[in-house]
Amino acid sequence: MAPVPQLGAYLPQLVAFALQARSDYQAGTLADWPTFIRRVRAFYTPAMMETIEKVAPGWNHMATFADQQTLIHVTSVFVALYDHPEYAHISTTFKHLMEWIVLFHDIAKEAVRGKHDYVHGFRSAALAGKALPTLGFPINQPDTGGLEDWAQLTHNAIVFHEGHEEYIQDNRQLPAITAGIDRLFSDQSPASLVIKPILLHLSIDSDPDYPTVAPLTEAEIQRFVVGDVLPLLRLLTLIDNDSWNLFDAEQREVQRQKTHGAFQKIAQQVHTGEIE
Image (cartoon, rainbow, N blue to C red; front, side, top):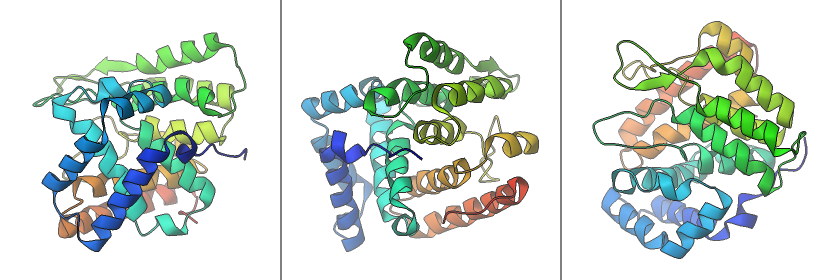
């Protein structure tokens, strides 16, 4: 695999902020949501927001919804990543990949209270795919036309489904979307391993109490959740769930066990291993 660009080289202040929050969280000096939210909002000055926007276009738009709910959430996912027990044991390459995955995984989310955004997995993947070549990730087809066509396909892969009030992702488009990723970046390349977990992070049933509205079938899992996509998607799901329960250790452990169970089943289906 080609070397993975480091998020810390582009956004050192963000990485340092999240690592310090992790340290304070582990020390018990960061112990509740109000304190965390105050710190997050103090960190994201207008200048810092513009700095991140230059690296991750769409960041400022994402932060305009629901009183910065997604901005706060993504920051909490960084803390959850650095705090997770498995983080210390994964390779340096996976650590760098996970940082980019966290940065972009909800970047297209339009959080509106009382509604759901069931399509932001695909749309965040589209934004990530457009941004990564500007950040040192190799691309096979440097002409912007092919990348733009793929991004439009991925962004527009939505469908209205009876029984839901909002649009959901159209999984029928996954063969074309993933073929485009492989054509542009190559399968299992650094960019591919950032984009695909983002693309699929709303597609896995990891909690029976909160069913996924557009889950992958077993055949789709066997086709698309392969190679290193599986462990990266697994860790993303774990830390995404952890982040919502950052200050509730009991509920966090309940969610972890559900996620472990779901991905053990997936690993059996695709005949591959866990994070090494």
